[in-house]
Image 1: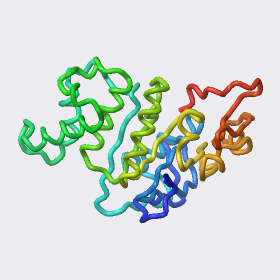
Image 2: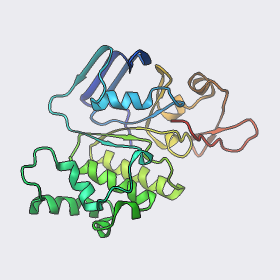
Image 3: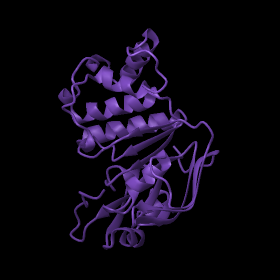
Length: 261
């Protein structure tokens, strides 16, 4: 699995500044997403990770610089699970179908649309949950449902905001393997993550962000004491385990990066 991006460019951010009102969040960002890219964005809370996703998604305009998109590029977005109203009265099937509202004329699903929804639910292993209320799902099932919503749009680029936040270790591994399979099938993927050891170290390409891009490269190139100190403002030790970098605190246990968004 490569993922560093050598194919045609889908989106280019050149010398981009961005923020909200008078608050500047990102400055002088140069970031290109290729059609064969698999990238994780890491950094502390307020560093601009979600802002960078919003720029890529097109829901936030740059205040400076240039953003260039490939014509007719299809993009899909998976939000943080914590931001979803799980009491909304809707089934898994209905939730996934809603991603196809654009361009639909009839208020009910066609036979073809129903087949497509059931097909993508089966592909993600939750076909038997189609009629279940969304609040009855486990964290892993919720994540798979939103991945199904995204895949129904047949995107070239999939954007995910903290896809493993709040899920257990087993679910995190399942999500990582599923995303790796989607990437192998030709989908470009960019995600944010706070989990340096459990998620970021397993990705092929990382970008460290804190108001600007601090570093860009493979986990072994990016997860280093110097880069992490520039990114998080604190010294972290890094060991090698089975060929992968592992972040530890000064006392030796594996550092658990909580509440870093």
